Image (cartoon, rainbow, N blue to C red; front, side, top):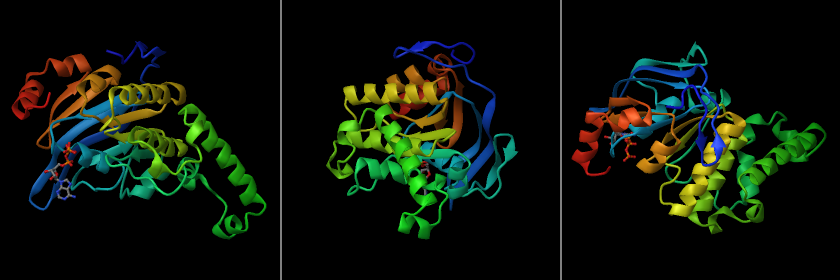
Length: 273
Ligand SMILES: Nc1ncnc2c1ncn2[C@@H]1O[C@H](COP(=O)(O)OP(=O)(O)OP(=O)(O)O)[C@@H](O)[C@H]1O
């Protein structure tokens, strides 16, 4: 639907998707006797918004955890930016430009919004611990540069008014926005979002949709997201992959997936369309 030509969404014009940036080939992952993923293959194109959907326990979070190196699949291959990734761990994934948010917010609740977003810059910091502790010379200049970047993200996400507020005091929807900000602070090439709208009211969902589309459009960030709200998924995604019991049962544009009988059956069977 939106692979080759930009379309208007929430008032923005989408940039066209580029070449394949992430290729997942025949991924299988088990936990003891539980098969979380069985022979899953799909790819992600540069700049696209790629959704992973499926009923509870389908393997969606496991898939994200494979992509960012939390889990190592027993079988299969991951090709990122044309290179087969071996022994990927979370740190290596983050360093190579893959950032994520979590289903349950993972922020430092006692710290301010600004400080939480600054933690997202850690991987970009070059000066050593001693220089940072002394706040001297290069460390000071670096800190200032990182703060400027953090402030730009705060402006982009329209959270200037709460930049000094401890995150734990914020309503849930704003905490989710701060979490997005922290992931953006790493300037990722691929952003993995695990249920970015979970627990939000309609207005908060609309805001989050707009920010996801703006991130994708203005920074060119490739986005892979898990989301249960079908309206949102079908509205903002370029392509959707559907999992059920750890197997892939559908893959295509929102229209193709909507008309896929296996997908309809899986959702009707679980009663959560
Ligand atoms: N760390 C783990 N140890 C054991 N089993 C796990 C682990 N993580 C996931 N599983 C199992 O793998 C399967 C897929 O789980 P996963 O959380 O990936 O599904 P999901 O589609 O994200 O579900 P939900 O929508 O409920 O979050 C489930 O049967 C789950 O119990």
